[in-house]
Length: 271
Ligand SMILES: Nc1ncnc2c1ncn2[C@@H]1O[C@H](COP(=O)(O)OP(=O)(O)OP(=O)(O)O)[C@@H](O)[C@H]1O
Ligand SMILES: [Mg+2]
View 1 (cartoon, rainbow, N blue to C red):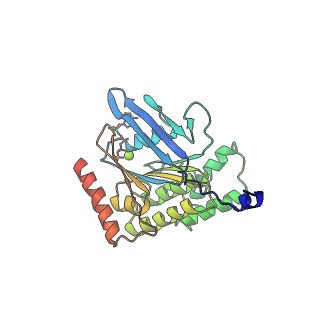
View 2: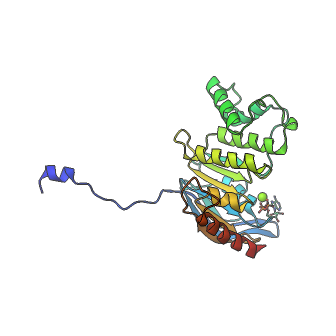
View 3: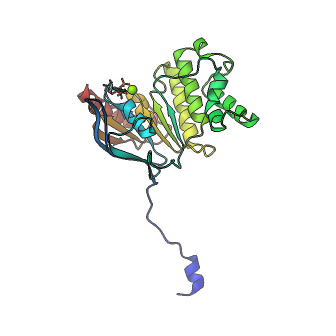
């Protein structure tokens, strides 16, 4: 074949799966005699949104803490971006939002949001650009007008939103969310779900992967690519359900209802 003809040829390569972002291998976590996680293994790929569902006390928060490196695995290992946690500094940035907001009471809303940047700068004053970004995030979580309020002046749901903005301020590649919208009314919850999906899809942020603990089956179905359903303690992965409905997902559609039913049946079996 002549060279010119070769140049014009397009070679169809097989579509490759995105690289693994979080790999949990035979993970075990014990607190003294209490075994919370046993022999748990899964892979979450870049660009995936995964929700974790399971009965209260089954070990979801413990799993997020182990994935973020806040607690050490008793057995097995966690890899972030292919690197074993604790062995080397991970090249991917992790952002974590806890079940409780954990805001600093002596700092205003805006000062709490910029905290990750301040820590990274070693206590130096944050730039105007970073302050502007913090204000945009404050607006994204619907807290305009509350930038100078202190945590004790905010409701539980508002404090959770500050914590979400703070987690996003760190500009993470991977966001671990522990019941981020638990204390919110339905309307605010739906609005923030939509905002979070937009941040996740947006090309302006590094954010590629989200792992979210939720007790809302509806929220899990409307947001996730996959839903991990866990059995009661010790946390065992019962099923990783794929939700292949296109976004925006209409809760009134037949496909949505079917998916909701499947997850509900699985969760009910655990109750
Ligand atoms: N630091 C700790 N020391 C001892 N036991 C712990 C610790 N953290 C969690 N546990 C125990 O581990 C188990 C799982 O707790 P975890 O908070 O992970 O559950 P969860 O699935 O997040 O529950 P919920 O849905 O209620 O938030 C519980 O029995 C809890 O008492
Ligand atoms: Mg929890």
